[in-house]
Image (cartoon, rainbow, N blue to C red):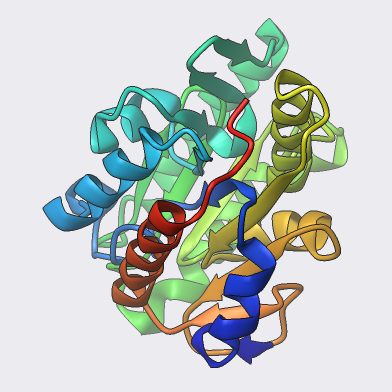
Length: 271
């Protein structure tokens, strides 16, 4: 993984004249990681940059988040972008609306897990469950480090029977553990589907994808786009499927600025 701006000149040449499809994670990418998810907000400057890019005929933006669709839409409040919530289980944007169908049995399983898990984690200050409709997330960022292993144990004890019966799947993120439906659907498949859709809309014209994310859940997208676009991890460099890294959300903001300047200078086939 190389530092992105170290190769900027070569990357700029590669992007020249291209229609860009920017796939962006939210937490840790557009907004800094904070103690609780409800207070994670993007800066006014970043929001203005996203707005300008969303109005550019040579650029499309999709925000691919683990948050619920309603939550991520509320956080950004921009009209001309695609929102993908719950890691792609719900998608909405201009001329697109997709909602995954989940069974009543799965809904009841989630309710039971939430009820049982709430009891188990109640002794641990800072641990809480986020109900995202299609999934549950156990947050433990605020839990004292000496109790984290106990919170994780409580989670696995709660979900194990549902897991072995193949009723759910689980995934770890940054200081969270998630319960999701049994579906072969992740951020990688979401971006490939959205990319194929955009290529069809543009009648086969070249669409160049760029994905930026900071979490383990973004690795599926890094892997899917590794050989057909540019993939960027946000944070300290580590083993990853991403080709490049940026250090933090401020460097992501700088990236958006550079793309805007570049797009002002370039002419793409916008239709």
